[in-house]
Image (cartoon, rainbow, N blue to C red; front, side, top):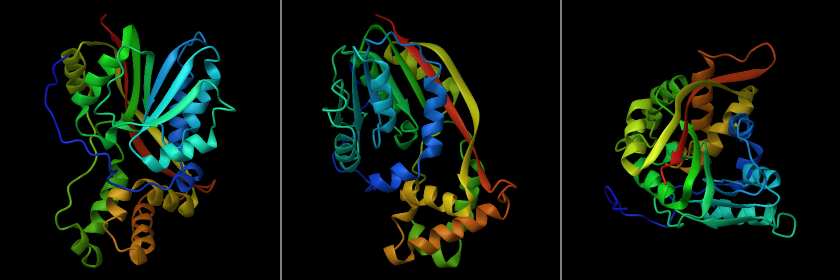
Length: 276
């Protein structure tokens, strides 16, 4: 299939992830993935691709569901891939493998029955390239199940971030800052799926409640996933920046009676099948 447009693809990740820290502070993302996985019916012999597998814990969970199948986890972070390989070795998971891959450049030729992606694709703006690769990599009548930040996602925490980066102490580090995420809606995504030859089955913006254990849990989430912001701050000041962001958010969204912090999210859930 002819690509709709091209971008310069780099193998060097823009942000350096800390897999150990992410593994310990990504229960919110894990729960979102598990909620969707529970709805997926598997026969046990499928070949499955997990785009943006991160530390590999969800990918390994999927592998257990297809003992006669095969699961490949890919990620743009080499640190995450190396961590996943060590954490979930082939000696324990013979039907599981991990490899570095740019989701905008998938070249698996009709190898997979199912392609999934959880809490990853909002990091990528060029979704047409991703969808083209998904179409190429699915078997005829194969299925894609995607879940990522959608239109309206993380509105309140984003508003808190905007207020903090505008403060005199921090604004010097954000003079040329460009919003790094892509939060798309249903209609534009429906058009893109059709454009690449995938048939939409379900497209839905779903409000979600992500919870964290108090202020420290919120700060851990900010530290492990808000690198587009924190990476612009000198290392010795990053803890102060995260503290300011958390304090700003909690001033309007206080810890509840059970000690939890609630962050409103919106996920775009996508189910589509190959037209072959």
